[in-house]
Length: 476
Image (tube, rainbow, N blue to C red; front, side):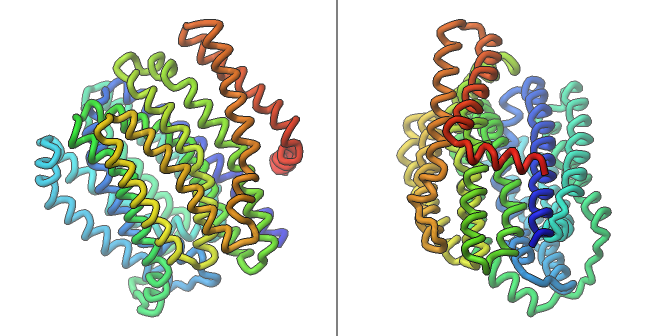
């Protein structure tokens, strides 16, 4: 068990480092590209993201989660998953290639035909990296994954910035995506040195699909919903406004999704190892939730209060409308890591059926909110996303409470103090700097100084036990 603890702590550190560095580098690159390319280029690529997202979910089909959860994976299990991944990748790309003209016609954007056919190659490339990445995750080897991810983003990012300066337009984003996927996949296979036998097993497939099938349906629902706004905005409005939303959604989701990815990659195998020890599982579950809230809440609220002056300062006035959207979306995305912890518990407990049921309920609710908010414009649509995030937390925590000794109320009480401290720190910082100056640079700098100082002070005063736990983890 001590070995598991060391692996978990090491995994958290390396996974966090990889996510923070890779997403940080990617964010800087996207900011540079946004200034050089403008909103319309991002809007065109945003129109295609739903097809790539749905394809990626189909290719995996929940097999990665099934392999990680299985106590003893065999070579037949890995080879079965690989053959399935590649077969579906080929089918998905073929479908995208032939439907590209229809996509172009739907959005009334002729350029989308060639963009879709070339960008779609990423589907096939990613198919070759799923099993090697899963093997590294099962071994909790996040150090190698960190190196691979950072190298891939750096190389693809530098090339894309060079191309942007030479005015390649939306093709810059296509090339960056393909290069990142290609380098990532090549390095994953090089580091794992795993070779498929190309002899799939019916028994392995039955197990993998038996568990992963429900996750597949849930994943398709989630991917469709997460990209539904791009479809509606791209169809009802235009590429320029979709570019604002796409960039705002990316900027506000990067911190939340970064931590969410870290939590899912590390806690899922960890929870899987201790799934039979109920008390230990519950303690680990609530502590993970508190630590996630401790880091992500102030980060997201801080982003919300500086978004408009920051984007205007860095990207120019063309991107000012995106700043308001970032502020709204950040309030909803701050809960995403908490959602991830709840849903990880369902998978570890083997309740992929309940996982699917919850996704269906939440997506029906999300669709209703979207339909209600569409007539009022993009800002209100984003506010609907925030409302959905908070309602989803209530739904998730209620059902996971039934699988543990921690009720939904107990889970909410665990994170509520951090939420209150975060809001108080941000409001004081915002009010102070708004009173003192109207200069964008001074406002951003002042809020970035005042808010963290107040937050750390309040956490030390009112959540001292949690503060000390984090310090101990840092020293290990």
